[in-house]
Amino acid sequence: MLELFHVRESDRIVVNPAALRDAVVALFQAHGFPERDAQIGADVLLLADSRGVDTHGVSNMLRRYLQMADDGLVNPRPEWKIARETPSSATIDCDRGLGIVVLPQVMEIAVEKASKTGVATVLAGNGRHAGMLAYYPMQALDHDMIGYAVTSGGKIMVPTYGGEPRLGTNPHSWAVPAGEMPPFVLDVSSTVVAANKIDLLRRHGSELMPGWAADSDGSPIEEPRLPPDFTWLLPLGSTRENGSQKGYGLGALAQVLTGVLFGGGPELPVERGAGEMNHMVTVTDVAAFSEVAQFKSRMDSFLRYLADTKPMPGADRVVYAGLLEHEESLRRQDGIPLHREVVEWLNRSLTESGLDRIEA
Image 1 (cartoon, one colour):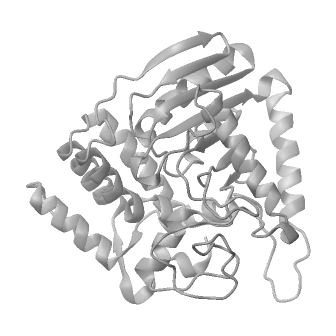
Image 2: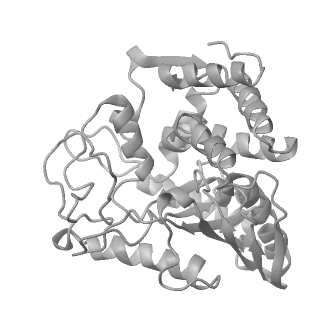
């Protein structure tokens, strides 16, 4: 993430990862989640924090998830089930289960199927927010498989030339294994910027960058300014002149793959507060197409080729998708930086639930 999204040093409190995980598990359980599901959800949030994706970690998402459970928008004990199945596919009804709890289990089904059929796709509808989408493709890496995930829901993206939002941020994510090099992990929203990053700007008191968001009539906000109370985001590309039709198309495709295919019509996206989201994961077994060791060696060569690119004037180096996050995870092994307000909220919530406070 850009530096402006990270917690300022003056507001930063570094928390032990193990202690933070224990606190997250305890709070999930206090709000009705079974212990195993609480542990799965905590792992998804902590991986985001460890990789520097603060927008989708404990800071931004935990209190939202707990509030959704309290308000009945999330089912903390979903009885999700396979509604339709073939050897290489499945359609799952998530029973309003939280994505960060259900999707890791959905991905396990896809991996198992792909090990037998080479490629497998699982669609998961009637779900809720999936957190850091890269978590699920990354599950395939340990199996020498390529993972893909896409999710859709909400109304926050203004279509190209649109005067009102019609789609969610609708991200796509891929993870590709390598040998000695950190894996290629791409996680991108169909909007210029993820909605959660706007929430971080509000918390930090920082300004929008030009071309990120739209005004109340859909017009691009072209000058730096504090985020408005509402959030309408522009498609990847910002304007038609800069290629916004590409981000708009990616967002619409996400809706087709996860919403229309699951059974929803053109008005399937719901208001953001309702929280309904649909997901799809696809796994490709490298061994079905190539000798695994040779593939990983070729990936290493390709990734080094990218990383060894001569940088432009003023730049230190060239990176590829997933490299910075990998490096950040190494730096954060002993401590997760959280905003002071987040730690205060965590300790207040833990105390209210009769749990031990977390120490910095």
